[in-house]
Length: 380
Image (cartoon, rainbow, N blue to C red; front, top):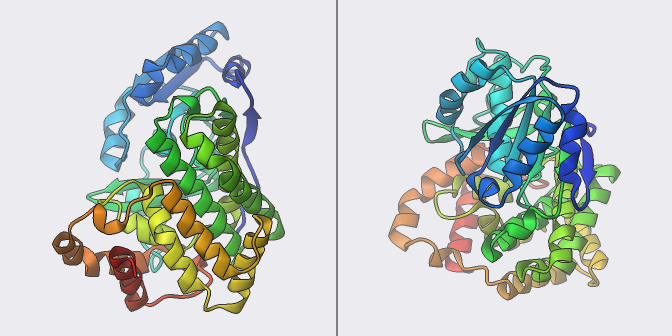
């Protein structure tokens, strides 16, 4: 098993966006890929100004999709190749960072086939590895959840199926955590992305390959979410900053410890709702399922003690109450029964094939996963 150390240099704090100028001084052609909201809030112009002040030629593309596909990558690549940047900047949420990682790969290695290097399921391996890449990437997250600014993975759809690119080569060289950016999030996005951080922390802490190093980051993120997320949802600036840093801590944790079946379930149910929200809905059911393993039960109890409780059962109840306090809906409020049941078998099979199942502390069957979906839907 290969474990990644942290490749990414992290710059954090109010106004840290200015660090772009320091990095850009060493490059001639800077391409920025950005979400539309970053233009609206002025941060895209700010980043462009810093790069230009450093003496670089700058091109910017805005309005990148929220659910990126490889087809989007193919559409963007001609402009990237024409500009020929020697520094890439991703400015936006996790999807913007993910698509920029993929662009970096296929910009530098144009003869590489997507299916040659992407993981579709846990039973097949890519026939080629992503080679050494030279174009550095600055990741500037605007939301506080995905952890993509430090991770070595990129999630993309192709022909409706989700694929994963996984390589140390696509981990960003720099992550800039400026708390001004997450203060622009809506309450709903702040809630859903913050809940994603919580699930990242809990799953990373309990995988088969967790280490004392990943545990420390995971526990730090978990404690921060329980303390600060309710205030962050209400728009408190200090709380938004705390959760923003916790998202990166959780990202470092799962960079090394990976994730589990809560993410497998939410990935395959992505058509129902937002990723962080689905993670929060499935989490109590996954914890209850994993508690059959005694060592995992003890780890859940350790999490409970870190936040002021004692047992794994108490942790389970606290998470349910936390979801309720934050207004997390039931799964059956998001999708009708007939539609859900019509897709249940397909979702269960795809979730069972998800690569993250390999790291879950308890190996599920397809039937187990199907039952988890059903319990979550009917609130059992």
